[in-house]
Image (cartoon, rainbow, N blue to C red; front, side, top):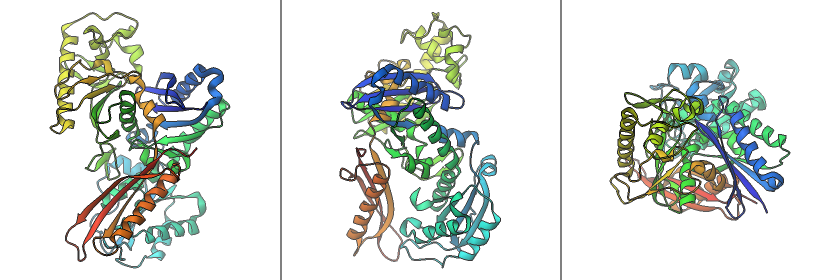
Length: 506
């Protein structure tokens, strides 16, 4: 027998579950998320291992969905200093690198920026020869923890970015890590550059959380293979996550959606994940999260890598109620501050308990008009959010998951029914435990001669990235292939996006 552990670090709670090789939940735990995140992770992992007892030796893998990267960006802490190089002159000079960044985030991250000659046209031809001398001068005058390289239309031709990586190694050695934009984002220069710089700034955070996870495992004498959840509901190996930590940012909502599909057996639905601070609503399509078609803003910075299409509302179990509902939440302090636990702060948990929707806490909660009004307001917030994510389709069920799922009413306008699966409060950790490994590739291909060969190369690259993330090379499949015609070009071309996925290698 073998088993695997899924862990999800949320804003209020850190959840852990153990699934055996028959996908049965054999242990589970929910612990408050600690201010440093790592201690809460340690407590949740220790709890499920203690529950397993002698069977702890059966654990072979640990899958972690973490908020470390998100918190680092939002709180502007533990971020590395990044030297940002753009290959684009004489074009692209009107908008310098890091334009539009919040001043405090830019000050925390930017070690210097350079815009040098180079880049490509949309068909992959070079705009100008790469100015290697300017790059070397910039590197020697700009101390940095990492280097972010972004070339114009690098998804159509990545040779120049790779050459810059070689120059960084030649000049600075292996002590400085390089983040290349064609590996991070898709088309869209500024948004791809932003994502690449954020990725480079997170290298130290990735090292710290990886070290913390391995330390906790070593403390228990477990020699297991750890994986990180990424923002499309799939997994990546630790070494892969160390190169692309920014891809962990949307892992929490993605895990919740995947876990909801697994626990309920419903593959096409709206999912409401009710936590302690917020409720995240998303849509399942074929068992996977519907992805956002728009650029995603992270910490005030616009990026363009793929993220789940999530609508977050300020409604959770710890949401403070009074004259209105939220947006302030007691968060992980709910067990000390909520009325249901003997505290003095009325929260949505108290309102739901008073309305008879759940039995939580250690103290009775008396009904009041203020709490009843909070329930009515919350129901309207949920109904409005469901209407917004449904995009006019009212025949989908709503799957209620998360520790605060009992806040939701028995019927929600806009949903055909409300489904409450077993173990719904740890759906996010379940989603991490059942995930596949995946890889993506975006490029531009000719629309005429050479199109088929270019698409096959794109498939091969996506499959190779899935294998690098930990997938079994024999079982990798192409699960998504999209072609979008590009207009106003001298030669007809299409944008090609490919996603490959497969089970983890045994």
